Length: 472
Ligand SMILES: NC(=O)C1=CN([C@@H]2O[C@H](COP(=O)(O)OP(=O)(O)OC[C@H]3O[C@@H](n4cnc5c(N)ncnc54)[C@H](OP(=O)(O)O)[C@@H]3O)[C@@H](O)[C@H]2O)C=CC1
Ligand SMILES: O=C(CO)[C@H](O)[C@H](O)COP(=O)(O)O
Image 1: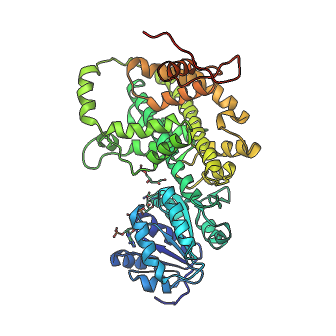
Image 2: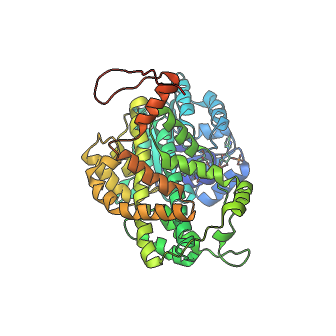
C-alpha cells in the first residue's frame, strides 16, 4: 500500500462486477482501494491496475478500512443475501460515524430497508445502489440506481457520475429516493429485462419456424432493427449471438445451448411484489414463468411427442419481418409500461418519491434494458410527471396504434400453429384488457356473490348488493 488513509473509494468483492467497477472508478480519477477475501483476486487487481497510487487491493480488512479517507465510501459488490450481512458485521467495528456503505448488488429491497435502519442507529449511512450493465458496463460505464440518505449522497455523486454511462453527455445515475428505492428500481429493471429477453426470444422463434429464416438471416434482421426504433442492447446482442459459430463443433453456438434458462430471483421478486401491490404485469410474470417452464424439459419433450405435430406453414419473410418488428416494438412498450406502473405504485406505497422521467433517463445507456425507446418514455413522463401508466401517454398513442394490426397477426399465427409466444400474446392481451371500457368481470363478481355472499356493486345504483341466487 503506497499511501495511508488516502483512497477516496473502497470496494469489497473483486469478482465480475467489483473488479471492473473499481478499475472504472480509478480511471475516472478517484483513487480506489479494493478488498476481497481471496488474496489472488487482490493480487490480480493490483497487477491490472498498474499504479498503486490510483488503484490498489488487499485481502486484509483492517488495512482496507484504514486505507480509506473519511467519510469512508465503501461499495459492496458481493453476492446478495447473507454475505452482505456478514461483510457489514465485519466492517462495522472498524468504521467511524458518518461513513457510507453502498450495496451495489442485487439485494432484495426489504433486506436493504432492514440494513439501512440497523446501520442508521450506528451512525452509518447505508445505500442500496443497483448497478446494471454486466462486466462491460461496470468497466466502461454502467447505469447506477442509488437510494438512501439524500445528504450523504453528495459524497457519492461525483464518483458515480464520473463512472456511470453517459447518454448524450448526461450521466446515467441519479439520486432516486430514500431507503431501499435504489434496490427496488434495480429489481424492477431486472423484471423488465426478463420481459424484453423473452420477447426477443419469441420473435427469434417465430422468424425461425414461420419465416424459415436461418441464424444469419435473423441476425441481419435484428441488426437492421437495432439501427431504427428498436435500437436496444438486447436486440443488438441477440444479433451478435446468432452469428456466433460453435467452436466446439459445427454450426452455430446458439443451436447447441440447452433451452433451460436459469434465474437468480430478481424477476421473480418483481412479479411477487407486483401481486402484493396489485399492479398487473402479465408480460413480466409470463417471462418468469417461461424460465420455470423451460426447466421442465423432460415433460416438454413427452408432450411434444404427443401433441407437437402441427405443421407451421411458411410466412414469407417479406411479409413477416416488418410485422415481427412492429410486434416486438409494441410488446417492448407494454413491458416498460408494466414495470414503470409498478414503480409508480411502489413510489406511493413505500414513500420513495420516485421520478419516472429520471428513471427512464438513467436507463437510456449503460444498463441491460437500455433502448432508444426510453428517450420517448422519458419525454412522456417529462410532459406529465403524474402519468399513471405509459399506455395512457398521448406521445405513444400513434406508435401503439400503428403496431396493433401487426401484433394481432403475429399472435394469431402463433396461436393457430402452436408456436409458443406467450409474452407477445400477454402484451397484446394486457393492452386489450387495459383498453376495454367493459370487461366480463361482472360475471366474476356475480359468481363470487353466488358461492360466497361476497357482494357486488351495480352500474345503475350506489351501494353494496347481495342476491340470494337460485341454487342448483
Ligand atoms: N454479474 C453481473 O452481470 C451482475 C451482477 N450484479 C450483482 O452484483 C453482485 C456481485 O455480482 P458478481 O460480481 O457477478 O459476483 P461474483 O461472484 O463474481 O463476485 C463476488 C465477489 O465477492 C467476493 N466475496 C464473497 N464474500 C466476500 C466477503 N465476505 N468479503 C469480501 N469479498 C467477498 C467473492 O469472492 P469468492 O469468489 O472468493 O467467494 C467474489 O470475488 C451480486 O449481487 C450480483 O447479483 C448486478 C448486475 C450485473
Ligand atoms: O442484474 C443483472 C443485469 O441487470 C444480472 O445480470 C442479473 O442478475 C441476471 O439475472 P438472472 O440471472 O436472474 O437472469
